[in-house]
Length: 479
Image (cartoon, rainbow, N blue to C red):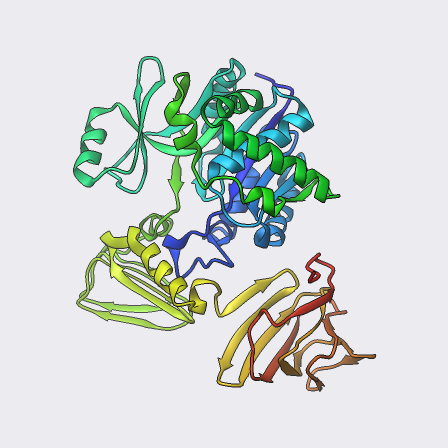
């Protein structure tokens, strides 16, 4: 069935705290690379454009993730038939209800009130695209008849980390939504055959969902309309819209399930036929890899003796175990997580404690990805920090200066173009330079191979917020 306009709306604002320490606040779950080399977000872009009716993709994400998200979209371009994507950039997270309201306002204004929206969380893994397309076509038909449509997943085990939908199998009408149950209740849901996992995927007309907001959450809709008008007034690029902060702060932090879905009487559910995984925990992530005959799943270098049913993920170091069972061990260069496999839903408590302590490991990896390349903190002390910096070919850092530190650069590999105050010069491998405190400077890679340098920072304060950007090709100039 053909429709004039379909707009997939990708929700990509979560931090994925239950996949710490692999997922960090600055590099969250949608950007994690899966075994096939693609990220969850790239797979969502590809899935969103698997239909001929797609006019545009709207991606809603945190403003700090814009350049990462754009990079994942650009990786997908060779596969996409309609390369059009716009971004709504949140100053901070406000849950799914405000995000969907703002996306509906944008889509309705651009394509008309009857545009169909397909809401896609960015942290789902869908393997069978053909079956996904068939279920979406069924949802189109229902949504085109002014119904709200949700996608339910047939449960295969008594999962306690998902919400459930009770429905009538004969009519596909939703009877109620249920929050995450305990194990005993989840087992009764599995046995009954009348319950589905709530996937968080929806399909509806923009006009229909906006009418539901007007009925069930008029204050939220009013605040969203003000935010949308202020956003249009303060942005000149219609494809990259930074949501205006003051009006955005008036929106409540609340989910679409609670605001709309649980209160709607005309809600249909599609019992999906495609394979679906919410990669929301280490147990879910584990299923992406094969186990050995003893039930151990190992990623990286490990030696196991008398150990069974463990999940071990190591980045660089050897992990050796003797006589351990049913553990999850995640080892990264700067943090290690060890827990029983049945406690993977509790990892977010660790992240919350790290945030309370302002510990760097909740926010960044030791290697931090930037639009121009990456840097890795090799060592740091009271008044120094040593980094390995990799600059991609033809890429450039911002023209910047620091108030509290000086920098020494040593070229390890490649050629560097350096701006140092009023001077501009090239440095080759084994050459070095010194950047005094408060001096405007820029590092660029004019060649077609990676530039690698060692940077030694010295000063009484070495935080990443001591950067005053004067010019930047990625739009990050300090205001």
